[in-house]
Length: 104
Image (cartoon, rainbow, N blue to C red; front, side, top):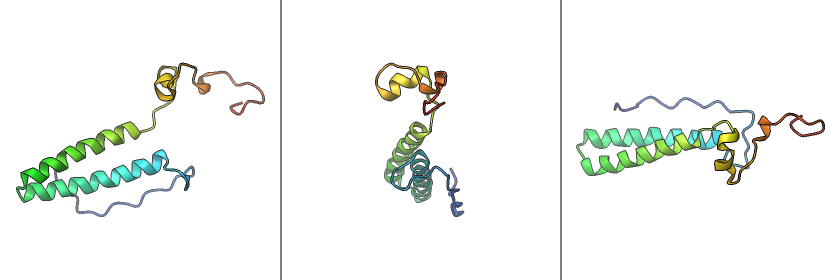
């Protein structure tokens, strides 16, 4: 691992950003920033040979990366519908459009 001494680039605001909710995009951006900061702290501890602090930061980094993976938006389909919503059903985007329906 190398220390990241460059400033973080500005993130591009998405049209669907909702200022009242923590969206996938905002959560992902916060995770990305925290991963970067944790990598920097880890590198500092490694350079200082502080193995206890480095181990703690490595565990945090691993947890943050797992969270970022879970946060990534996955396409909703019939296979993951029940896992996402907690009950069996059909993902609406897989159903044919019905006139007057919000999807049609």
